[in-house]
Length: 291
Ligand SMILES: Cc1cc2nc3c(=O)[nH]c(=O)nc-3n(C[C@H](O)[C@H](O)[C@H](O)COP(=O)(O)OP(=O)(O)OC[C@H]3O[C@@H](n4cnc5c(N)ncnc54)[C@H](O)[C@@H]3O)c2cc1C
Image (tube, rainbow, N blue to C red; front, side, top):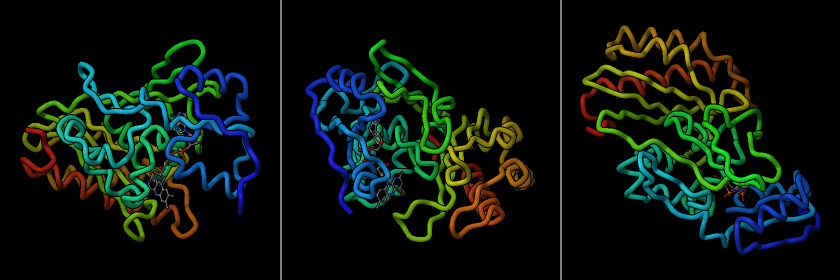
């Protein structure tokens, strides 16, 4: 299929792009890497009258250190994040998760901002944003807004972004020496969207975790934090007994939606399997720890 006709604009500044959004509102779509939008246009799932191409806006590019945060520009590609030394050192969960996103050709074009703004509940970056307690920076006609990742994803493919706002970057707290992280997912084939996935972070001393954040993808309309399981794990040593308790807690805590081939019970089981793998990796003293 071919897309419905639309006008195309390639603004020279973010402010120009916002002025266009103000004019067209929900009838405009931002084009970043195009790895999702072009398909939805061609399938006529989206029929905007204007496409605003932000790929020329250098002010949205780059990955930098800003005080206690790593700032990831909206137009940073998945590949740039995957290959970044800054990310490896200060947000290593993202280096671990990046190879799970599609294939390299798609990662070369797809962007961080596109993935966060699109808010696919099976996508890796939204889940990692929550696991790392990151925040989202938006710019609109009334200036900048910063929203905690925890409050950003409001429903299926729906976020706190207003129609006249652009996601400009995200801030991720830098990994301290006690930072522990893990990422696992299960997909039918490498590069497919996952059936279930899990991103986790915590402070770790020996095999004791504190302030854990355990986030699932592929189980609901948004990424989901397993807050009861987090509370159970907080301050505990990762013994076999605690891991078994956490698995049991997670099974009762989540209420997965089925997909075309997997029932809620299958997804619940797979989530518990991933949790066991992730927590077992915390038993080792050095693996995935920034010490
Ligand atoms: C075959 C295939 C497999 C894939 N597998 C995976 C996978 O396993 N995991 C995964 O996470 N993703 C996967 N993707 C999606 C890919 O990661 C996309 O790159 C990503 O979802 C969207 O990024 P983009 O830059 O291409 O955004 P676009 O397609 O350009 O835009 C996506 C949406 O976000 C909006 N948007 C984009 N940027 C902004 C911004 N800065 N501010 C506000 N709104 C914005 C657009 O208007 C549009 O609605 C796959 C894609 C393909 C084609």
